[in-house]
Length: 112
Image (cartoon, rainbow, N blue to C red; front, side):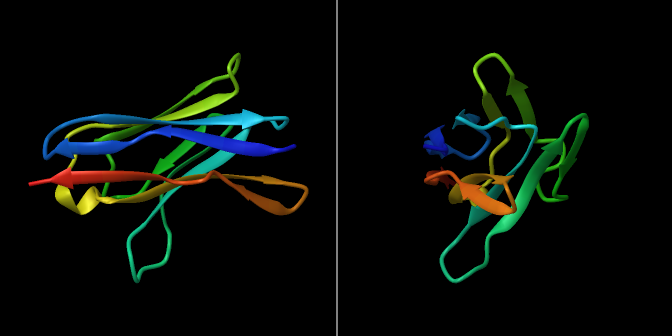
């Protein structure tokens, strides 16, 4: 079964760091994105990579970094200098055969 399994996240004080992981099963993570969502809002793309191209939303640029471990089929989102406004449910997503494959989501809460 194709799926993305997320881990990481949690509660951290402002200025702290967290790392999210997205492990793929039965698919290759050649292109994927990290999204976040807060109640009442649409999911926001915060970072994406496809091959050697990596893009970040302006709100996280310089603080978030995407990396990939090909051997473990895992993509990471390293988040540093976290701010309360980064509090959200974070998702990873890739596409397979024209369909979106989403991770289960992981909560990140940043206290002030």
